Amino acid sequence: SFVLTQPPSVSVAPGQTASITCGGNNIGSKSVHWYQQKPGQAPVLVVYDDSDRPSGIPERFSGSNSGNTATLAISRVEAGDEADYYCQVWGSSSDHLWVFGGGTKLTVL
Amino acid sequence: EVQLVESGGGLVQPGGSLRLSCAASGFTVSSNYMTWVRQAPGKGLEWLSVIYNDGSTSYADSVKGRFTISRDNSKNTLYLQMNSLRAEDTAVYYCARFLGNFDYWGQGTLVTVSS
Image 1: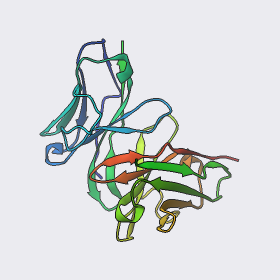
Image 2 (image 1 turned 30 degrees about the vertical axis):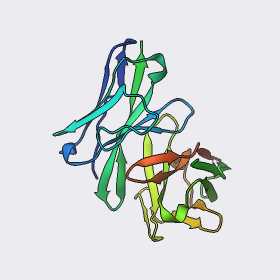
Image 3 (image 1 turned 90 degrees about the horizontal axis):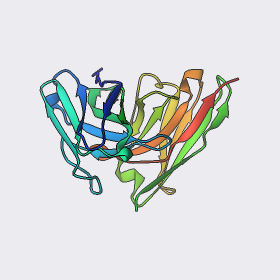
Image 4 (image 1 turned 90 degrees about the vertical axis):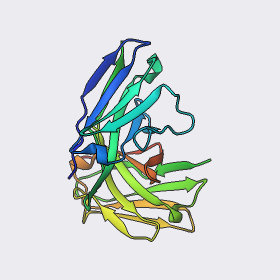
């Protein structure tokens, strides 16, 4: 099955830009989606199809995808952005149709 | 407004069964791909099962043969029948609509498998 690799944690000071990576074999050929999950809450879609934002998601959230790495960037980070972030792709195999990365804990210092 | 509300979680002994429900509003379950995703305590997200708009289904290896996804079109509700439960099935179970991505999620229901 397709494997997505994320760093377990990323730390950033308020006002700075956080970059969260998602690695996978030729992931640039797939559409990548990103979800934010705060403690005790369900995941929320923040970026879809590599770089599009659902309505209601601030422009501070952006995405890119090329080669073997997709990246979620959060500019002008706020305390409220502290959460776990998961990347997700279509896995293609019959028993792993949809694959999630292991998640990255974003800490706002 | 789209809403998904899960129910049916609880404490069950190893080897036991449980049926989860996911009541949808604001859209039609039978016209969409509907999925179940779980999250073990302190762990990441794991896709489990999908029922397509044509009624066909698919499962992750980890639950194949033990879990069954279904829907009741008259109630606009999704279900997950879980049999032969194991300790490692302990998790929060989410239903989610898939429309190119998982765009709407329920709040989750906790299943604890323990003696």
